[in-house]
Image 1 (cartoon, helix red, strand yellow):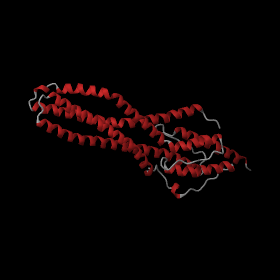
Image 2 (cartoon, helix red, strand yellow; image 1 turned 60 degrees about the vertical axis):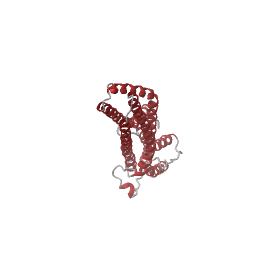
Image 3 (cartoon, one colour; image 1 turned 30 degrees about the vertical axis):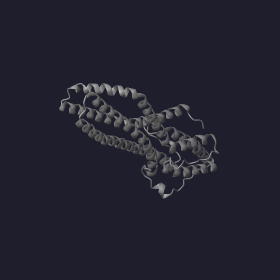
Image 4 (tube, helix red, strand yellow; image 1 turned 90 degrees about the horizontal axis):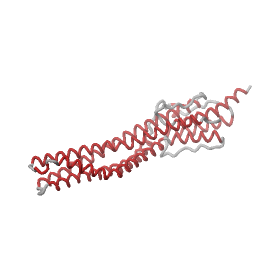
Length: 314
């Protein structure tokens, strides 16, 4: 059976858009924490300005404007590194999106090759990177389809209670944990980057304040030291915020994958339960379109041929 190349291209674009959206989400999370840190550093700068005014340091009347210019010039110097950092996050986000599609890719690629070569063997994915429900059931399902193709006759099969009782998408906790560990590693790298950047920017505030005063007082040293302690709390808050946002993002991504997995699973279950015309249907915003297309084509080929053979029997 020939595949429609225009349809393949359309479904490939839909899955690519999903991967790009996921990559952008991964790259955007640290921006929120970065903006929070930038705001808090601006507050620290304002506090320093007020402290100087309250202590009668007239030389610092233009401190706020001077600091802004100083900070911007420093940030411009760091733009190449910041840009490379966000490019790295974008690439990792794209990689994670492809990793999430892996359970469906295994199914889709198998069906694509099976259309061309009936001797191709199904090899399930690994337990660390694939959803348990779709991985386990696919082995049972494709074994059933091989029997139908071999015998040329479709007969429904009784399913185990563990598959019959699945009535809604199931969040695979082990898969979620494995994915979260990978995200945790990337988040840790992001946390280190935010920490280094915030320490450097606060050091600029201190440096500018000391340069502005001809005779720094003990009270200034105490003030800046206390400000540094507060910054540490702010840094941990920003890092915790980033971890929280990545966890929420991971949860919703896995939940979305569980929904797609359920669509694959229910279509397979319907076929085994006596509905040979059941096919996978994916929402536009969800991934897995291309692999569902190959699955549906393979079902059309095998079940269509078995139906023709059955109709010729007396």
